Length: 60
Image: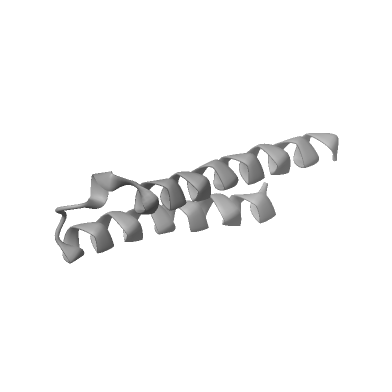
C-alpha cells in the first residue's frame, strides 16, 4: 500500500510540473509569432500528456 501512495505522489508531482510548464509556455514570449494552429497543436499534445499523468495517479 505504501508503494502505491509513493507512486501517486510521484505522478501528482509530474502532472503538476507539466501543468506549470504549460502555463509558463503560454505566458512566455516564445509563442509570439506562432500560428494559432501551431499553438493549438502543441497545447493539445501537452494536455494529452497531462491527462495521462493524472490518470496514472488513479491507476498506480
